[in-house]
Length: 166
Image: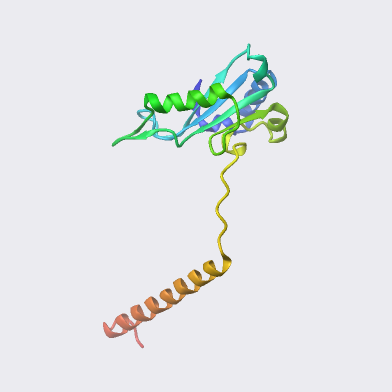
């Protein structure tokens, strides 16, 4: 099923349906897609692969794939080339965790997250490189000094132009 991504986390009736699908273990894979992929729909979509006969190795688990970075940008819209779809298909077929791209999540973990299927809830991200606090502090004070100097220059111009009293 191709759906808007909201079905992965909305509550209410959508949440009840999602919970039932998860509890019956028919969701095999969730793929989050980039926005502006379909004509007339700029919203981000997702694909839910449902299977009542999941392979034994996939039972009790759902493969979550973040394909929001797997696309080819074109002038008016984004597209998924054959190479892009092959990459996503390969992630699904391997059915294993891949940092920044894929997570295989057991149903107990999904239950603990209130039945959300939002892929970014589960996919491990590459940690951000450490930032030296001294460097951040120095950059902050340099930017603050520049703001004060710009403000003084603006006030001088406004006074010289007669726009404010000074």
